[in-house]
Length: 434
Ligand code: SF4
Ligand code: SF4
Image 1 (cartoon, rainbow, N blue to C red):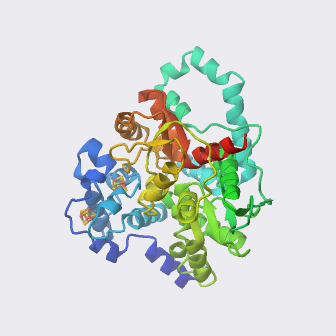
Image 2: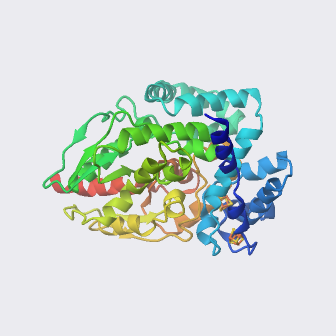
Image 3: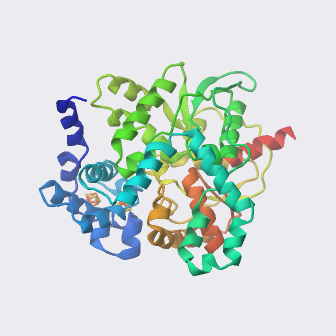
C-alpha cells in the first residue's frame, strides 16, 4: 500500500475530531452504561471514556490507565442510543482500539494468541472444526468430568467460569450447507444469500439450519456461497482493522454478485459489522462503492422477516417468552420492534417484556472471557431483570448472547430455556407439518 494511502487509513484509525466534538458532557448516557451501573466511576462511563479519548487525541500518552478503562468498555453502544447529541460512540471506541492496536506493543504471548485467533482461526472453517472436535472430546470423553472430580474447577474457579462460557460443539455434524442452494417452499418470492458465520458453523449449526428452513418457508431461495468468510466483527471490536478489511473484501467478492435481494445473517454482531463495510472500506477506491452497495443489502433475519408478509402457517406454541435485546441489533442496527413482532406472531405464545431489556447482558463478543469478573456482575443484574418477567423462555437474536444467558440461567435463573427468535419460529412452522 502506498505511503499516502496508509496515512489516510491511519487518520481514520484513531478517534475523529468531529466525533469527539459532538459530546457535550451532559451525562444522559450514564444510566445506559453497564460498567458505570456496576462501578459508579466516571472514568468507566461513556462520558469519562470520551474525555480520555480527547486527552489522547490532544497528545497525551496512551497510559495503562487509558487501556484499562477502554478495555473495560463492552462496545455495547447502549450509550449511543441514549445520547441526544448523536455521538457515534461505536465508531469512537473502534477507532480508539485501532489506534491502540497500531501504537501499543502487547506482551509476546498475547501477540501470539491474538495473531493465531484473529489471523488464522476465525477465518478458517477447517481450523474451527478441528478446535470444535477438541472441545467435543474434552466434554464427551470424560475429561470435563475428570477435571471436576479431581477438584480442578474448585481449585481454579476461573477455569470453571470459562468452561461454562465456552460454546458447545455441535459435533459430529457442523453447518455443512456451503456451496448449496435451498429452494423456496411454494412460490419463490425472494433470492437471498445467507452468511453462516465463523464460530456459528460449529457451535450454532442447528440454528443456521433453522434459519435456512424459516427462510424457505417464507418463499426464499437460499444460497450459501462457499467463498464467504468470517465477517470480521471480532477483529473490528479488537481494533484489528487490516484483517477486518481483508475479510470484508472477501465477503464482498463472494456475495455481492448473484443478484440477491438480501444478504441475511442471524447474528446481530455480524450484521452490525456487515452494515458498516461501507465505512470500513471508504478509502479503498477499488472497493468503496461496492462496500456501500453490499452494506445496503445486508439484513438481520429478524429485520428481513418483519419487513415481508410473514407466512402465517405456524402451529401453536403454548409458552411464555421474554426477549433480551442484542446490543448490536438494538443499538448497532436500531432494530428493536422486529424480533418482538415475530414472537407475537406465533400462535399461543405469550410475550412479556423484561425491564431494561436493551441493557447489555455482558457477553460482548469475547468480553465475557477476557473481562470475566465484570461480565459476570453485569450478567447477575441482567438475570434479575429476566427472572422478573417469569417466563419459560428467554429469546434473543445473537449467538454470543445465547451463550452468556445460558450461563446466567445456570447461575441465577429458574430453569428458563434460552433460544434464538428464529429457533422459536422454526418450531412453530414445524408443528404444522408433523
Ligand atoms: S459502549 Fe457500553 S460499556 Fe462502553 S461506554 Fe457505551 S454503554 Fe458503556
Ligand atoms: S455521549 Fe452523549 S449523552 Fe453521553 S455525555 Fe456525551 S453528549 Fe451526553
